[in-house]
View 1 (cartoon, rainbow, N blue to C red):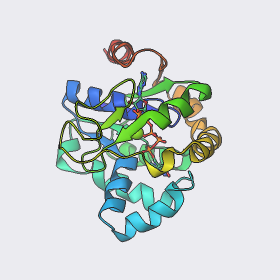
View 2: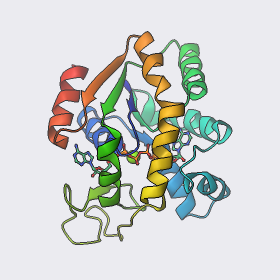
View 3: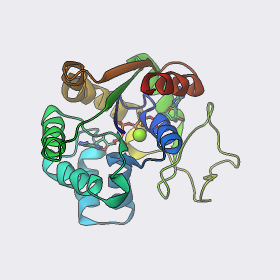
Length: 213
Ligand code: AP5
Ligand code: MG
């Protein structure tokens, strides 16, 4: 099963993608997590990506597309995957579509996690992320067992550089301009499924599972 997660920054794409990946035994692929891992490791890709991410802008398609196509060509992706944060522009979606087409394949579902802008800034300021393993927490909704420490790997949790309110507003603007058009793109392909992302995260997950079966 090949699934794409759509939704505004902070809608809960990553939270839901991890649960989907676990339930269906497929890899969770987040381009944002891949960029953050590169930033943490000080790679050239990370240095370049950071200049865009810190401003709330998209990393250019040239850097993003190849990275993603290489990742989905790996052995663990042969039974499917859940993409979180890719595609984010119409050109990215077209490249993915073409690459899958050449393999006689296609995206099965594009899951749109719908959350109004008003809810987003609030969520982001409470988010804490583990840059080592990609786990995500929320100070109020999903606190870690030990304050400031990742339950999975014991590394310190951080407020992402791009989760400051000013940057979040910019990310929302970029989302509406460049990513939201994908909702029409996948509606036309007949694979779009929308869930109400303002519900409790377990209820969001139950709604997604119902749509996928
Ligand atoms: P990326 O890491 O993909 O960030 P994003 O899309 O802005 O999304 P987030 O990760 O911020 O939010 P999310 O929807 O995953 O929400 P989460 O589950 O964490 O990308 C970062 C940057 O990388 C981009 O700005 C761009 O620069 C670059 N980039 C990445 N991919 C790219 C691409 N393809 N092309 C170009 N550039 C790219 O949830 C948010 C918070 O809410 C958490 O604290 C969570 O615990 C909490 N929460 C989740 N669900 C609920 C719920 N139901 N109720 C209450 N709280 C909840
Ligand atoms: Mg995410």
